[in-house]
Length: 264
Image (cartoon, rainbow, N blue to C red; front, side, top):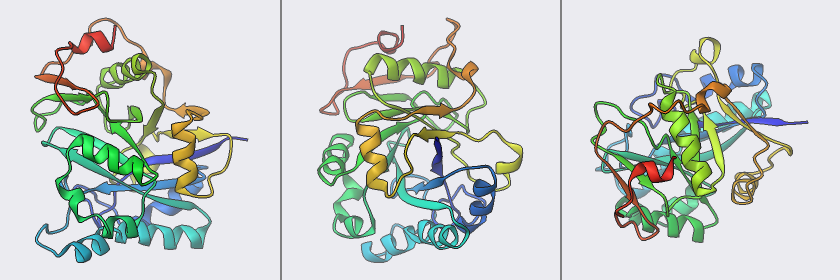
């Protein structure tokens, strides 16, 4: 038996771009056969709905409300809900962080100011993992594509927020070249999309008991399969990065590599 999980979900409690409150997602995902969801609201330097002037403890308490509200409703309806977040650097590149909790955040106010390398090192030291979200996304508000090849444990290779499937095709080949685990997520912001949009996710052969189980599965590359249409992973030779780009190493330093070296 395979167990399906949503890995990328935003709530209006903490994500400025989200439409739906956390509890609104539960019934739909349960109806669609998901074993669980991971709430990944936009963190401090991303499109967060919370004032950055709040004291850290107050900010963290508010930030966790989306997860906590989803967890409460999930427990009531019988859907597992886990905690994560999505952090942004330079308004360009985004990272899904899994495996840590509210108490860890309260103890790490310096997380607001970390570099990519510091984030990766501290998250791993804390027992978590870091996945680069939609690495090849190109939109008007993104000034450049940044590929953090050395400060991630895996790559999101299918993202439900992409109208252009080539972004996923490039991410898929990129993950293959890096030999990194792959995940897929709907990047959902509106619970009504559960019924009219394509849902993404990943399958595991075992039911997760905790977010620590998720981290263990990722770090050991034990994702059973990805829920996404296969056509999204097909390169046709015309895919391109049409905005400035840079590739960063394990020290978060820009390298002299061309993005095509990590694709073709």
